[in-house]
Image (cartoon, rainbow, N blue to C red; front, side, top):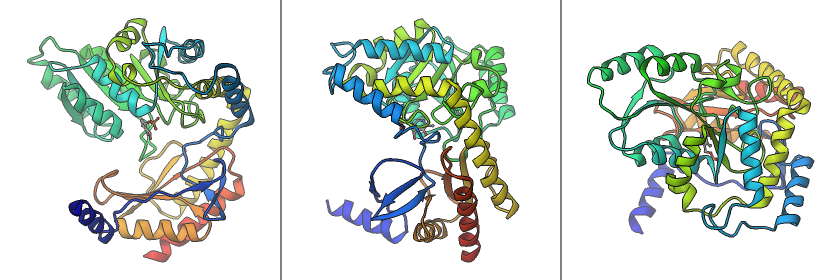
Length: 391
Ligand SMILES: Cc1ncc(COP(=O)(O)O)c(C=O)c1O
């Protein structure tokens, strides 16, 4: 107990202690915090669906018809018709034979990797992959070769090197589609080429691309024109889709294997009806004309925001998505800027190690389709003034 208290004190002294912040009311472009309305620039609710009336109604209707809970894990008695229908809908949306729901993105990544790979297999993993992929890699016991972020040449050299003494194990390349801290995109067409050349599988975690990128919102692979070439398309229902949970879309064989092997799927109570109802409504919305309109608004906001910050000379780390990091480097000025911005009514998180490497602290702004143009432009100005005021 004493050690933990000391550890917390030491985190405090280094400006590294994390604390929870409570929002009052529903998620939206403006939220209420500590009795005050602030502009929300740090939510993954990119399309503003988290409190959308259609999702709320679908969620209530599913609860009225099917109850509040699912009662058991999927393989026991927790597979309700809503689970099966949603999985069919996701497979159709992603253009795959099958799909499987998981209780969260974290559970999906750890479950997929542990369920399909093991000792004797080799995983090539982008250095900036999400923590849940890293944990899944550790859990599965395969040999891991991290490759420098987005660097196809380095990856190819690694694969060439490994192919000299290749054993019988499977090879997997795994990457975020949109990188959660940098907002840049994985070079998916190049990864597809390498996967074909070296006989590897390709897994893409599209937590931040689903609903946001591509003509019909199918994600990063649709945006980059290689949707048919990804073996394991993981995505979440809790970010642009506004609800909660996650899925993998893949071949029937891979999905059936996961049903028999993924421990986070097997040993956990299944998603409740409310969440399934909301997800079904969200996919219909995202894939339809309203989805197109919301993505257009989001892209417009992204353009305005990044133009202003780039114009003022800030490094946005190659962001090509509504995740826009503004490089601030050191923890103290980063957290100071985040605090000063909150005082001015702009809620944007400062990101420090261990979430990002030392020296690469940043303000991580995330934009929403239902932020107004004025809100976005004025937030950009406040960020510029605040950061310039600190130097
Ligand atoms: C890239 C990425 N993958 C997976 C996850 C985990 O998803 P979930 O929040 O549904 O557990 C996140 C969440 O922040 C993420 O950013």
